[in-house]
Image 1: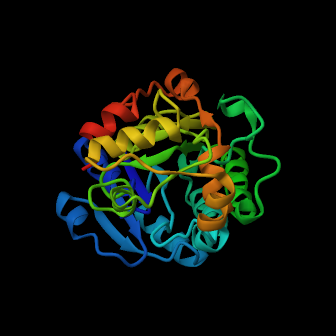
Image 2: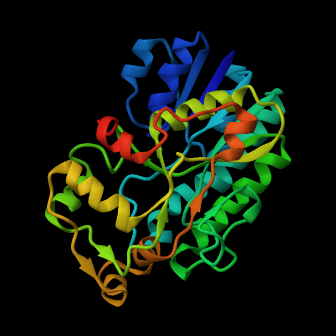
Length: 308
């Protein structure tokens, strides 16, 4: 199959492209500006396109003539948790305008398969069950600093299935190239004591290794019916459980605890929300309908063996 991967140099794209090539697929990697010599050396064709330029996207898709498009476009580097919507502004554009451009090009060229990246965890209803499936819907009342970002996610999750595509809601990434990789942002914060447990640490996180995210995208290529799927591991866990274990794994001191009001003041409302109120996600539907199973069934094993 010939697959166009939009966002080929992103966190998931860099893991996905080699997997597709190893399985014998032809791959066209669509990137904006970063270098992709390593992917080209493996056999991928690389095209440089601004995903927000509709005519350029259409031209690239027409030239490539793919049988499938995998939309992994984000702009997460430098995103700010304190100024959440401002930090995710480019990603929000890619989830709205970028998605529209790819869908329009897919329709014009007759691409039969479309898979798009979304997100799950803080998007869940904090007043709902501790672990939620795809029927639960998105948070009806997001905190103000996350409203624009949630609106972008909701938009993508509406238009892609309407066009016959599949949406993969990825949990919190860890593994190579992520904030949890060796030497990256979160590891530095944990080692320095700058990643505290806020309040009771009752916010429930759902994780996914980037390689497992990539294998879910491959599984979705074989699924012709539209739908939305949570792509997370088997063990949602509260911050008070996973953060101390990761600190032990890193050889760092146990994370300090701060009251919720102080965490909100120091880190902002989004971080306090993530630490105290978010709800986890279930992967049962993806397992049953996509035939997908994560290699790292739990973040416990993944943190120990799969971060680098």
